[in-house]
Image (cartoon, rainbow, N blue to C red; front, side, top):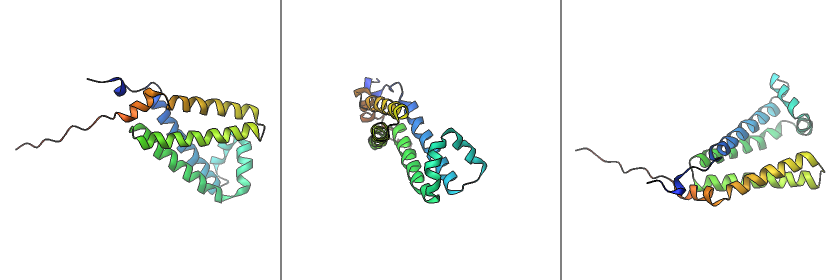
Length: 150
């Protein structure tokens, strides 16, 4: 009989998809920074300030974005497989993002972007630390033992 810990929390799948979306966007950034001047550069029109800040740093910036993409991919896999390390990695990723948003808000005085980022990251962390979500990672369904037919 399913227990409360077995019931998937609302928002569980969307957050896992969010990690995969982040991995896709980080990969996109890495590719466009590593190979500038392609038609893919048009997407940077969505974030011209970000491109203006990263492009002068050159192709070397592709490396951190590839690392970020890998971390987000692994977090998404671990999250959707209900692994405790997936929860922990996701928590660290969102926490680091929150610190960056606070920096943008306080130091760089990017009020709108910083405030929105702090609000979103803060809400995600509140969601992730709710007992229903934490318990969902502690109680994973077990595989039934394999039986052999003689």
